[in-house]
Length: 337
Image 1 (cartoon, rainbow, N blue to C red):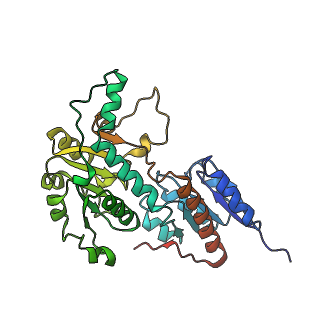
Image 2: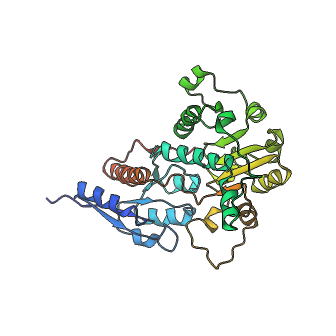
Image 3: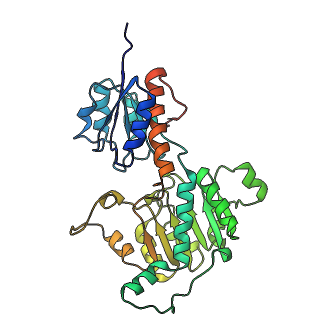
């Protein structure tokens, strides 16, 4: 009897991901993979009918209706090509009997290196110099820089990415302190941890975020937090936009409490990131305010975007989805409370 061909539909596949899908497909001739360039939305979910599992990556929410529709097709396996699962409703996941996997470690170095690079750009005031060059003004002053080796870098979150970032900062000679509810034993031995966020805020000249978004971490950096920081602190966020209250950040920039910010993520980033907005209007005043500033660097959620990371995200998510289809289990399954 001929074995049943397993079928996976992969949503939101970009051009840079297609070669890795093709490589994976060659290694798994018994699996049919359908590539869909559109995101997994209410308007596209019907394309999944007849498939065994779904692979997807998007910043937009996976709606309750999408999960309900997939379940109606007999599909209960969804593998994300990223780490975060904050755009899934845990209640809908459970009600529709879904098993969700992510790619927990696709390239910590990609994100850590980018966050350090952006801090260096802040310290060396490159955006301000580029603006002067656009005006054909090639004078040095008054944009004098700071050195990374003179900073006290407060790392919030010491998981895979945070640990790599710490190693890089130490290599530059910066003093590093860290805060995490869950201590890494090796970092514990080095005495890097402080006991509270307040203690980190009081010492740090740089605050960099490497934590997931949960209800308890939303708006972690708010007015109260900024008030506790040193004057002239630098903020780096390559994690999740809603970790920062953007209006409070704007006020802190206005007052000089915050000397500069590097933001790879924003609260409402789906309005702008990965879109060509040339000639288009957008109702996002916080974005326009931040983007206009010489001491704020905004990048379109690209810290992860390296060839190594993209290959791992594609192949590991397909591996996880196939494992779910074959066995009903995967080492990368995400457990929802």
